[in-house]
Image (cartoon, rainbow, N blue to C red; front, side):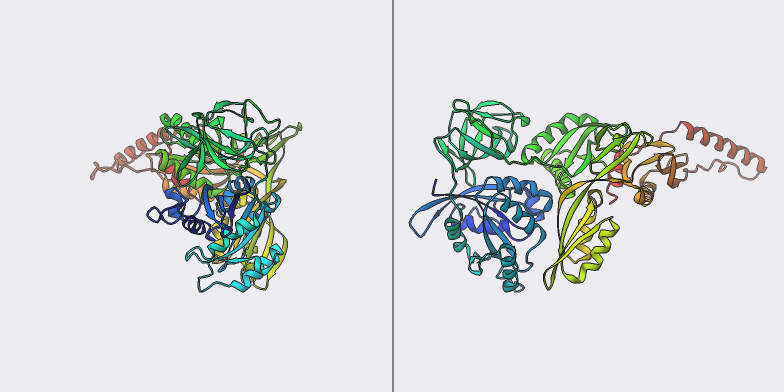
Length: 596
């Protein structure tokens, strides 16, 4: 066990984690030159196209140290985007050390700090690394000062490296051996292994990735999952190299995978403890957090016959992405579908994209919203996740919405425009700290619903890409929320209704009405598009009727003949309006919901 080192790489988005991991794989000859490609650990096309890591990836490397010993490294690469912080928390739970990567051209950013605090909470040994020092715009001395202030370490502890050229990689590998402690654990104790990830394979079923804290697991042994209570046989166990490498046994301190032939995704829970059936552990591993979805949206199949296929696709996706939660839901306009919980808007976008690419599922997504807590006058409380969950206003005492604490790190010249943006989003400035002369940290309190849509994009554009953003849930507070209904010829369309703050209801309603007017096909009768709060109409647009020229056949003659035909047409239109239904085409739903 003393020759094992388990560590992860943490950093802000786009600070070069995946590129540095590539160099570590090359240096330890884990991957041959022929198989080498950029972002070797990112195995999704989506990750390569966007240049971001979506899933954490585990891999084992062997390193020959200068003392003549060979060490086994278990590296877990993590995502950097704020939406995927749940992946980071699971990786950290399975490690003893972390490489803290800071971009020498950008300095410390918000996500760097929040991931660092997460690692410190788990008592991880931190190795600070300054990446991208080969670039002309690298500010090595300034950024080193920032790292010293943040960590309180010595200047010689900071390793200067470049993921592109491979400079400093040897120093990093040596530091991993010298500074990160070997895993502690008792090989003789009952088996305790933490599941930190799982993937679904169409031929082999669910493959669970685990880290053994105590005990030994052997191939063919009977094992038990403590949270679900399921008992299975370990058909295959092994370690994760570039592919899967089967072994006969794995002992405490190791990271590996187990295949038990499970076909049902609900039987494997990330954060569960694996133990032996023969000598079971008395208690599961503590301290693992459950996922907290931030944004909710309905996902519906375009064709209702595809409902069961969509359910299967979501279950398989949930195995590869434990932070996705869903439950069945029905809508009058869209039929049967699912209410899904996501960690943020990027997460929602990625799930939509993966459903389309990996499972050929084209879906409609309803207006995203967050979950609120409603209290009735009789003292009952319940969650409101869809606008239809909101009770009648006469029974309602109050509705509480979630607030977050947001950290924004930026340059001083953008403070004014960022404050304006946050005030517009109903935020309050709590603190303003100058980290250095040209970097300031702003801490705001904001309602979560306000940052769901376009906040991150607008923040990046007003700060020319210099502001970094990170948030953590805070508490729930009473808020003046209303249910905004969209009506077509007085009939409400439930898929377009939304929960909004009273101040924003009018502008939001106008936007949707305008968009619908552009997108809805014209009918033989007039269509009134209205946005309403309760019985009060707050916005309206009208689509005029298609007019058929009924007087075309009357050339010359008396005017009363034309008038008679026009009167007849008028009556017909009136009757048609009473019995005519406005069907909203599926494509229109898709386009309206891209409103933001």
